[in-house]
Every structure is written in structure tokens, then in C-alpha cells.
Image (cartoon, rainbow, N blue to C red; front, side):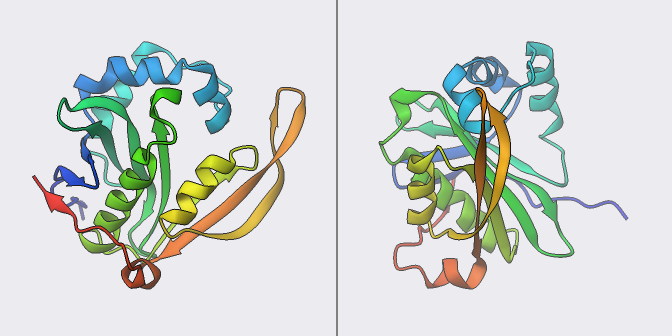
Length: 193
């Protein structure tokens, strides 16, 4: 049996838009992967080539275990990051969430929180997921606050999960369940464009 995902609509709300990631985003994605701060925040230690990014942007368009979105900010719709539900387990109705913004110019503006809420709404409503989890390193409290604003709850800590720059760092595990998201006072309405 071949699994097919529902169409990947453009999602808009709270001053951001999410559109399906594609080959047109490869150059911006490659630049993002080369940023030292982005590498630190995501724990990316292996070199990433432009060819790898192009192959990724091609592959994700038809993947059945993930949905990858480019984050854009109207009105110019320029790429400012990516938001992803990956490791989707359709039987368990669960997925992993990750997000990357294109550098410090986009931090602290609410873009990450808005994009997170949009993708959670899509995951819980259109994809019928029950559980979405993430992992964030302890040295990234800004991201932890953003995830908490979106409704994620800390479940635990993977101690000394990352060796980076001469020291071990903990990874914080957070999750949100569909009923928790549905009960949120400020859950966004997803508008498919």
C-alpha cells in the first residue's frame, strides 16, 4: 500500500506564511546551513554541501514521513527559515518538530512562535496527529520560551546529549498533545492560500 499525504497547502496567519519547501529554496537553505550560530543551535557538526541541500529540497516534496515548509514573511514572501514535521509515525499519530530561522535578524520577532503555531495547527487538524515532540539544547533558552508559548511542555532532559565546543550539553525534550493544543486560548486559525 502506498501512502500519500494530503496536499501541502500554503499556511498563513500571525504575520507569517508557510509554503511547501522546494528546489527554489535550496540556495537560501544552503546559506542557512553554513551559519555558525545556526549550526550551534541545531547541533549540526557535519559539513553540508550545496548538492546535499539541493537533493534534500527535491526529496522532501514527495516524502511520506515528513512535511517541510519554508517560512516567509509577507508582503515580500522572502525565505526566512524552515519549519518541519519529520519522523511522522502514522500508526502512532506522532511526529517530531524542528525549526530554523535564517539568522539573528529574525530572532526575537515572534516569527518562530507564529510559524510553530501554524505548523502545529496543520499537524493536529489536517494530518490528525496526536503528539508532536521536539528536542532543544539547554543553551538555547530563547527557543525553549518560544516553544512554551506555542504550548509545548517539558517532558525531560537527555543529560550530556551533545558534545560541542569542548563541553557536554543537555537536550531538553518537549511535547504537545492534540487536546492541549485544541484547549489553547490563542490557537491560530489556519488559512490555506
